[in-house]
Image (cartoon, rainbow, N blue to C red; front, top):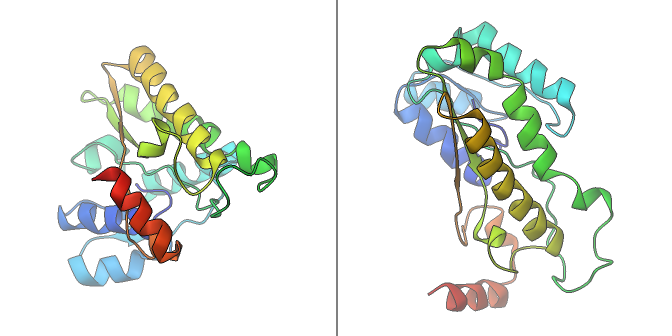
Length: 199
């Protein structure tokens, strides 16, 4: 199951999982994935910033695929990014609303709580993968709010790994500059500047 699978890294994740012949619930790309890889895929729309949507999404996945961990070989792969980020002046404290500052970490918590009973009931437990960013460890990214919420999500990953493991394995990946459809929205000058800092 992947959240944020409609574009960018989420879409790439959905294709990678489908290649491995696992079922996938990925927004807006389900038909394409089904046709290309011959796997069962479905679209479930919901704002993962609301816990009731996370429960609905997980329950739909369980209804389609059966027990999440036993059906998906890597247990479960989650992508927790809401697609909310807007590119803004990193140093402008007024560029984003308060609501923009409070979006990523809470969805990570909601998305782990939703399948936790299923993970704990499974002999092999479960696996929860958070898509973070190098912006979690350095003051960089599309906006200051993005960097801060990614840092909060990374610390939440550590807390969840400590408190829910070893039954539930909690990890995060921290990609750098990704020139997906979203990443290419940056001005070319900013992309080159970021590339220079990363190399």
